[in-house]
View: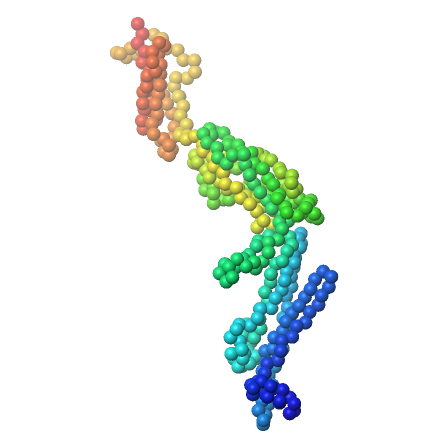
Length: 339
């Protein structure tokens, strides 16, 4: 007991002495695991009595690799805050209190070293403030990396009853050329609904994009498709479509493109006279001469682009004449004086 007392008290200037940290680990040809344990107990002694308080802690973790990729991760145990030594008493007092692990143990810290990933791809991460630019996680290689491009991204002056046509290219820019990555993967289209509030109809090779048409794309083998846009309720559209890996929506890319249709107003037709009409001395006439009744109908005065209707006629050898008709269903006449 005296040797124990001398080791604790005398060799530490009369202050209780913490135990040293210990490290355990395993190592194989393909992996290495190491865990460091820091003590979380203290011993208080004097010449008359002694007291020992101890705490046991078991913790662990599971690393699951991407089923179509692989990853190498370093696992660290974070050191205690630098103020820990000054608050040993507080740690000891909370040794038996639930939910106080953060005050007693360091957290696990994971750092990606290398590998390849599919869902999701692990991007590089660096510190932004403390030791700015220090790498926290290395980027993994893309197992699947979709890309969408087009020959042109904007088409104008499209007839309102026609479709705008784009030629687009689908690519799989995988950074891995072996295993399942080299075999390619299924990719599907989607239309960003928020970019299409006015109901344009979008087709891929004639199939509505709402059916999420799917294509198999191998790395280094681009696929060309036809994208068509049909007018909805307005003339101008800025749309966004996307291409995503069939088994992982988060592995995706998008493309913006614009279509401008020629303005269109309401339909209009001539109800009278009908085809193959004849005007002669048997036609209707008044004090001014003979005339041919004309009736225009089939138009919608509530159409957003409706302004007015203009009826034009031209007599042989003369320049075009105009009669403007406003408002609701209207009738006009083409007058021709007969000698």
